Amino acid sequence: MRDFTLSMYGQFLEAITNTEYTAISVHDYLKSAPDRCVILRHDVDRAVKRSLDMAQLEHEYGIRSTYYFRHTDEVFKPDYMHAIADLGHEIGFHYEVLDKAKGDLKKAINIFEKELNELRDVEEITTVCMHGNPLSQWLNRDIWKKYDFKEFGILGEPYLSIDYNKVLYLTDTGRTWADLKIRVKDVLNSGGSGANSGFVGKIASTKDLIEFVKSEEVPQMCILAHPNRWCDDTFGWTKEIISQNIKNIGKAGLVWYRNRRSL
Image (tube, rainbow, N blue to C red):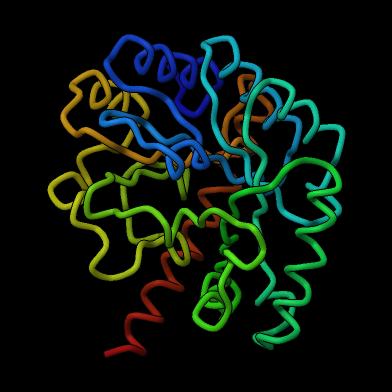
């Protein structure tokens, strides 16, 4: 069976519902975390319709998750935001303001406030999560080294507000669950990956992930799934895998080059 299809994602959701885990949004985790839970987070980078397809599937399983929307012409679609929120999911802000301000912190925070307010005109926003552009020299979450997102009524930011010494973090970045040295920006801060030690490289396919969930080996985990990577139609699935394979070659080169420069 092909991986990264909605059908496979449905099997993953079913596995969660047959365990002691509670599937939970980022907001709900930060407000009151159950002892055993799976935090479900989605970055809406493009292909917004696939986000709605995923949200509908989660709703069928009685699962609530978080969808982080970019403020771009392709993604900032109020109708889709309303539709996903109406299914019971959390809507968040996938900010990329340091990229847009070319590293100017004052300009970046002004952009953040403006774009956050525009998203809040559509839906309630209580958590935000940075977008990582592998071609950019800036890391968007660095804006919080100077400013405090709580001053904007924000409860938390997944990269900064979740203790990954306790929470296992798994992401489909690069269209694989394994860390194949292709993550440029989707990485945890140093010292915050204790829960991941011993598991990196052991979970590569969604089937691996499903079996891991069934084992209930860890009490808490955070799963990042990009909806644009998941579809059932053959044309869209094939186009996505070809595109991602090309991107992975470039990202692996970037990681190698930056590691060489840091030596």
